[in-house]
Amino acid sequence: MPTTNTTTSTTTPEPKNAAAWLTAPKTRPFRVAEAPMPVAGPDEVVVRTRAVALNPVDWYIQAMGIIVPAEGYPAVIGCDLAGDVISVGANATATFAPGDRVCGLAGTRGAGANHKSGAFQLYTKVDRAVLAKIPVSVSYAQAAVLPLGLSTAATAMFQKEAMALPLPVIGSTATTAVDAAGKKKVLLVWGGRTSVGSCAIQLAVAAGFDVATTASARNHAYCRSLGAAWAFDYRNPAIEDDIVAALKGRECVGVLDAWSRGSVAQCARVLLKLDENGSVGGGRKWVQTVMPSADMVDEEVPKGVEVGYAYGSTLANNEVGPATWGKWVPEALATGALQCKPDPEVVAQGLDGIQTACDTGAKDWGASSSPKLVVEIV
Image (cartoon, rainbow, N blue to C red):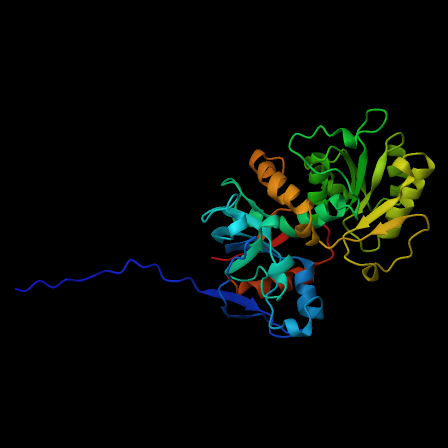
């Protein structure tokens, strides 16, 4: 009988992308549909998304139509992701390779210019300046809680136009964070249980500071587990005087207000009182909020206090991104110096679950101790 030759193809099919689209301002739900396959530019890495975390900005964009301009729709939003590297741009090959497990901040700099490079898709391109490898001991869901919170805290603390604090290092013994008496300088973090606050405490400790923070009494142990030396109950009517008494004789470099909803003026009052007893180094009274602009802070701040604002993705454009994401984050995750906090709560699976997660987050928003909502993208 004649022999029939058969050939089995081993060609791997080209991956296809899909996204949870915002089709127009103030519309819901997200529409899951095909999306263009991203191509990495020289400074970009394409990541197969495995988990995304939700942030208030996500449901604000959907409900209020902010940030994305009219010409930016249909849009793909989302900031926090973790996943696997698929392809690497020419300038990123020294650090990343296909198969690396990573987490990072989507939609920054050039990648976000067309408002279609957010995290809410199967394949996302991410700027190498805000991307880090994650060890196998850290799950995708855990890693996904970090990017925006950590980036916002780093932007607020380390950028020259913000607090301009010394950068974090592993095993810090930085003398720049020590006062004339040889004691560590102090950073006050208002809202230590929040996503930004949790990261700020750890970054400040890594930069050589002692940290004082505020949180509900039930979260004091949590804040201390991240490295805070003092924790004060924000519900205590005497909190301002308690902080001033505790920090007497210590040099405070300012306040990072990670809550920034009715608390900016209170932070300013604390600084003024600290200045009265000589606890503000150099006399500079600085409150750094996590809000991106002055029009988002509807409070009357006492005179004599400077207020700064933080737009969490700007660190991709300067030395802060590479110093934190490129150097400190991967080492700190590997050694356990950086904890992925707040803990993730996986609330849905797949791109279809992003609307569910947004709805859940919007409903529960306002509780500073809320978990970080995560959607696994399988």
